[in-house]
Length: 347
Ligand code: NAD
Image 1 (cartoon, rainbow, N blue to C red):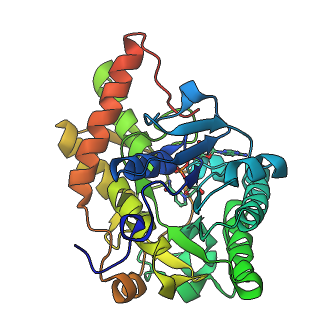
Image 2: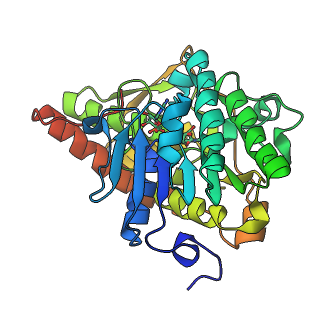
């Protein structure tokens, strides 16, 4: 057994765990994780109607509620021992560059949810922040230095989405400083995997590029449209690593109210990601670069010195392994949809 605490080593199996944003990608996987660990009282909340959730986990109380409303947050947090707040209006670069107001409005969810969890007497509260909270001026070159936690300040976060994350982090920090409420903050760096958005405008690069490769093969038009010149660099974390990291971070008292990177430190260019997907699909496509499309910062990587120091671990699923599973899942969704079977794509 790991020497590090997790929900399984900290909670009773009938303690109530609340997961918000659970109709979405990461919180859906987190809900399944707790279910698989044997927790018997899990409340999953999302504003989407239930048929649109990526994962419906059996035995889980699944509620459709808009958590920008404080009364709904009170209802969601009632009786909770732990609250994992992952609800946010978000998407890939195509969404967050275009809908900054929607992104900023997620501040309502976090503001009301942390207060509701505190009032409910929860023991711990988790907030999903983002690498977009980092100072964008440090990310102007593809050969970027990895971002360490202190690089969020002086603040120059990504407009809209990044600033919302930064202010919500601050709420979490002050709830601990003033009220001794144990809050935990992870800054996720690009998460990918099955059961996430793969079409409709909110999808992120790994899912979008997988879908485009599938579409090219299906149509016989062996070309792919790439946003930007393909030299932008990122790191990509597989969903299983993200879920494991959330569980470890939430139960590490050295990390109370302390933002920490949760991401892979393996840097790859978008061109490199396309090549990986092409290898998996067994195809080579002509690349068309769309220089007018949203592409975000030039380069961004996760400095994992801190997580290695406190948890002795970093996300380590190889990109090829994670992308094989992701590609296979998107192919299955694509096939289902073509066969007339309803698939929640995330639009
Ligand atoms: P997602 O869009 O799949 O899930 C978010 C869910 O929140 C959606 O199902 C949405 O319906 C729900 N939601 C939005 N507004 C709501 C509201 N008012 N009330 C209730 N539910 C609401 O996104 P995800 O990729 O699973 O992201 C989860 C969290 O992780 C978010 O906070 C996101 O900002 C953060 N994050 C994700 C990534 C990534 O690469 N996926 C990177 C950095 C941070």
